[in-house]
Length: 102
Image 1 (tube, rainbow, N blue to C red):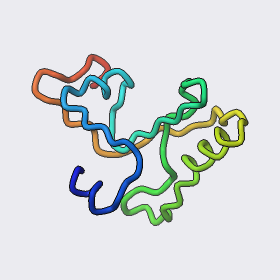
Image 2 (image 1 turned 180 degrees about the vertical axis):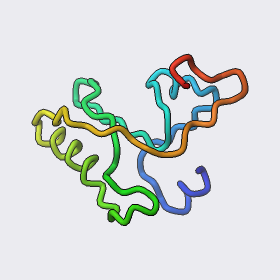
Image 3 (image 1 turned 180 degrees about the horizontal axis):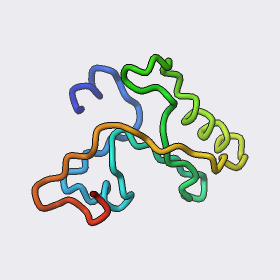
Image 4 (image 1 turned 60 degrees about the vertical axis):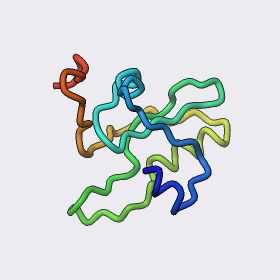
């Protein structure tokens, strides 16, 4: 990811979670798993980017994540109707899998 960040020119902070402590703190289960916080640092969205999945023919639009971000930026409440992310499960280091991970 460090190489990709340099090549693409990401301007946002990127976290490498070596100990997997951050993933555990947020009870992350898969990638990508999106979290949006408001100005008070309250979690207001955790869910999918959109309804696209490999092979389902739904275009990648980011509409669900974008809707949440637009609401936060406009000072409006984020809809509580949130669909969880689906993706590859987190590969936990041996012996490091949290209790919530089945």
